[in-house]
Length: 468
Image (cartoon, rainbow, N blue to C red; front, side, top):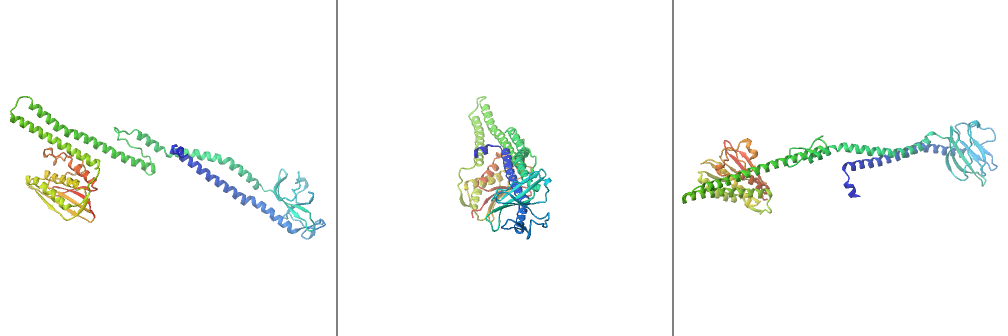
């Protein structure tokens, strides 16, 4: 049953739940209504008859000789009888009518009531003419001083409201299935209308392919649940489209970057083979080819590093390290490059401990310091600072280069990105260092930050959570 239910459409299940819930509510309402009507309208009729019966038993006296007395007066004589007094009949033990008291004339009666069943209390309706229905209550009456049990039957005009109970039952039995059917149809129509945005979303989603990621799901009402779901999907599609665009750009850029050294290798080789050359000329040609091969090897190595970092490391070698020691070691190794360019690397540090992978952290820091050396002018001072807060440690690298234009700052960590003024190919960069650094920091649960420095320069920072 559960499998069958799960295989049904959401529209079908909503309509069925709507119909079942409506049916239960209507059935409960109908039963409550009927009981209320019966309690408040039908039962008082019976209660009136029982009140009349109590009054009769109080005012009527049957003597042992069979004579009837009403309010102490012999009923064989003339007694004062009001129309508001109870109507009743007395029947003896043989089923013979002893006395009938009612204000009806013989010409109004087409059929008199038959004798009641002896010894049985019964409430019934008897019609003496097409226009006069009577409601009667028959009950045994013990005659004082005798062993005979008579029957007294209290009579009143039957009110039409009592007949309405039967009509009410018939209406409920006939109308309830019709109402349930209408509820089912209405629920199906309403749910179908409410779920039409989902159908349109499905149709639109089926038309979205990798070659056509510009399509978006329709949003009929951004304030309801379906509209919010479509908006979330559209945001996801925006991210996918940007990811595919980035991937396409990466493939294009990588192809271009790989094609350049390969073309150079081929061109140098072809030139070298066009004629015979001296040993010195061949050495120069082979040196040029080795230089391009080295460049190609470096590019492939950087691409592998980026793919590994962005794909996730299988396991990080985390340990507690003193950040100042690692920063001093990194600065010491790269100071040689700075000296060759007439630059100075200044270290400002304070003791702080973090728990991280030292290899990845050191590589990320080297990328920043190496960039600062490449893009700072001769004689510049590069400042590497270690600062700590209660929860985080920040290592910043500040250079005196030309800085990054505002329109290029959002693309700093894109693969193969080079700012026009500061990242020419002649300086040996591939445009992958910051992309790799950002991927490393993501693995280390840290952040790569950037801010411009006035009047010129840039400050890149690595932020990691503290070990404690």
